[in-house]
Length: 172
Image (cartoon, rainbow, N blue to C red; front, side, top):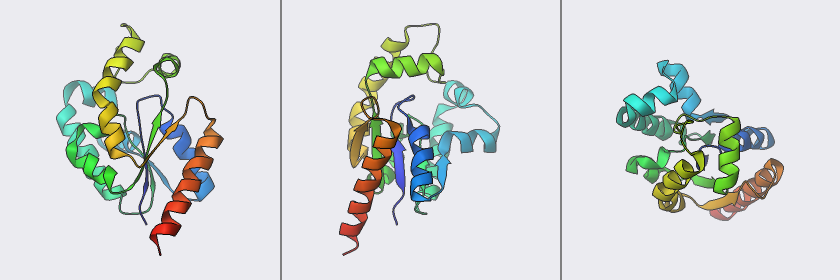
């Protein structure tokens, strides 16, 4: 069984949706950023600022390992920065959780994320980062769901419905 992999910008709802989806489908959730932080003892902020290429390789190896087990995987927003990771995403049931820059800005201001400099204009940083990543998110995913217009429960319903349809059609 292929894994359900959630990708998207920081603040798009990957962890929140992942937790609810895991409960609903009775599957295990793996958050790549949390796993890397706990295993290596470095914060994601530290990795991004000081050892980004090493971080992307570790992230890829972890994704490669987790994606074989029919899990739910919540990836860091930059997972698509590594072409090897993108290949894994393309061969799984990858969902791009997206939303408007205004909503992302609001979420980031309430819960800061490591890729943003909180002293600068957050919305401009989000727009710049999204413009660099948008095609990779699109190319790596089977489906995109807007977490700014749907509730978490509605997103879970859409994802599980498409997932079940996908697997029932591909098992024939």
